[in-house]
Length: 212
Image 1 (cartoon, one colour):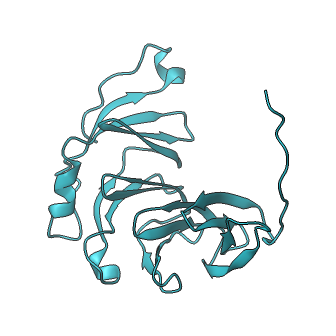
Image 2 (cartoon, one colour):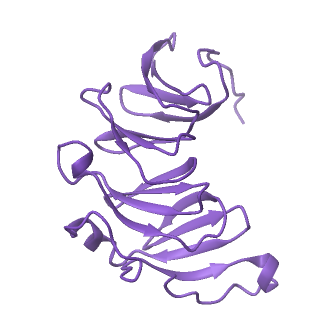
Image 3 (cartoon, helix red, strand yellow):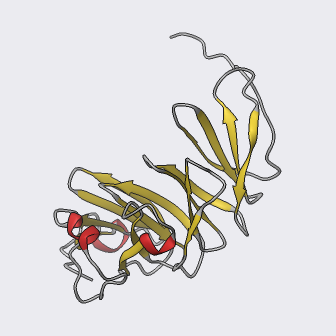
């Protein structure tokens, strides 16, 4: 096994770094210091400046084909278009910290300490906030959402209580075609397939939860 060597050490943030992502041309980092920094991918790995900030610590970050997306303790999500990066649009709706993000099949999923999952169509036009809709709110988690991970035609979401929910994505594309900016909780087209909690079911694999 080849020895791993340290190439460089840098310190620009004044708080703990919570996420780092790379594009073809640069690296982005975000931190509890509220800031999002842009870095060169070439030696000496210098910072290229501050992209912008939230009103509180930045908890999560990802890259889509069109945006750098960040979630924060200020309960907001910001979509930073790559041209230019200094003019983000803000997505509001969560009541507490946004701690996890996932972009899958054209939809942005966000999970929060408020226990809710929100699905956003952020590619529905070139305009501002009005073209970026929350197309669905999922509320089966009873405590803070911690992780959102896609697998084939399903999405796994986890929370601090130890629950794993598995969601059917077979009709997810329909959500981006809706005209309304809000979706009734009685008309879910993404439904929970299974809820699994080893602590409660003794490790038997969980049961069918159906739509929340």
